[in-house]
Image 1 (cartoon, rainbow, N blue to C red):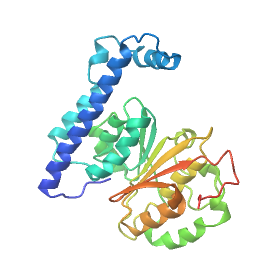
Image 2 (cartoon, rainbow, N blue to C red; image 1 turned 90 degrees about the vertical axis):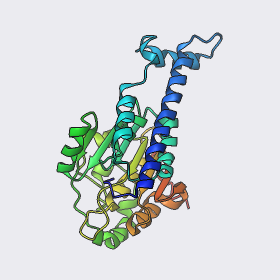
Image 3 (tube, one colour; image 1 turned 30 degrees about the vertical axis):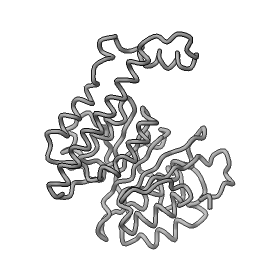
Image 4 (spheres, rainbow, N blue to C red; image 1 turned 180 degrees about the horizontal axis):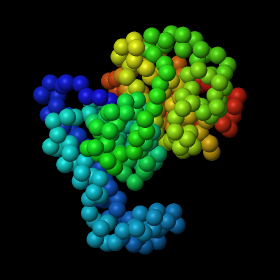
Length: 289
């Protein structure tokens, strides 16, 4: 999620498209709020309930205002020379899911210049970032103190990927359970307690660093994201996204542990998987086919 240099024309195009994206989200937010703020005659109980939840905490004047988080984000991205590393088309895949599911619980492996964007697109929900570099966390949070982030240590390396792939095919790694207590070497066990307790609706794997042999790589993050989805309580679907699938580790580990049968879309370097809970049927195959 760290920024790489981009040609000026790519910067201008992405910057413009990001502003369009945020304005579109605001327009939808504004229309939804105003539609449900007006009493609807003979509406269904479900619709009336939604209307009450939407308007109970705001006055008629405040309901018509743009949320402060949207204002802050629009100003930041319209005045910054730094744009998210993902392309507009890649961002749009996750943004479309957020438009449907937010406010929701969104877990992101990685903290970077796009983090403010993800937190804003999940307006009203919880967006938590997991980052390997403590100095980088301090740098980002000085600029965006409203973001929620935790430091995470990884004990894997990219050059161990082949061995970890073989380990991951064993019975201790394909058995569904809480990653915190898993016997699988791929399971991340040192995450903050709340990461294991929350039911994550979306998980984005865009970290840790994985472009050289001594880097931690995303093997354990991808596996853990898939296991969190399979172990989701009370059923439901988890949308999991993996970035940089043009690289060997992200390509092979996402197909193996998130399953090609669960993949619904690939756009550029981003893959989108929808993984159902396996808790209601522990005999369900690790991958559907």
